[in-house]
Length: 130
Image 1 (spheres, rainbow, N blue to C red):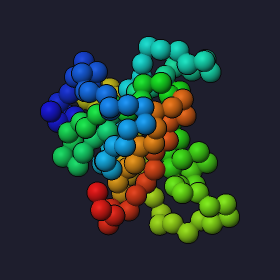
Image 2: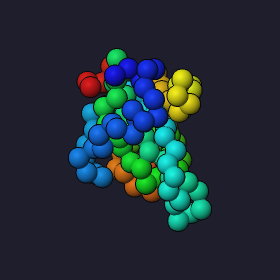
Image 3: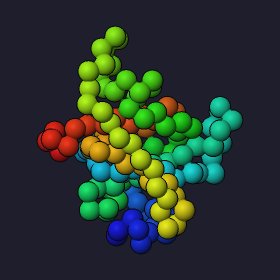
């Protein structure tokens, strides 16, 4: 189902990835879903849905994260090499779906890291094989 037509209930029905550390293919955008669970930090947890380039959901990614690190902790990308910042410019954007959830997307593919308290996503050049 196209994410523009999905309700909050539809997003909750998207299957979770196989395990917290299961590899997920590169995807086009990420929908941010607030949960009703309180994290130990005092902030609310979020879940995330990976979306393909046809605006179809792939899977839910986390559910236990209180923070989203864009391009990893510190924004240095993956892999991070101290003192080396020779990457193409990334353009990240956020819009709001009709159901009220936020969608984050960029000018490249998105890679999701493991489902941990500090959830991280990374930018990948569109020319990289998906």
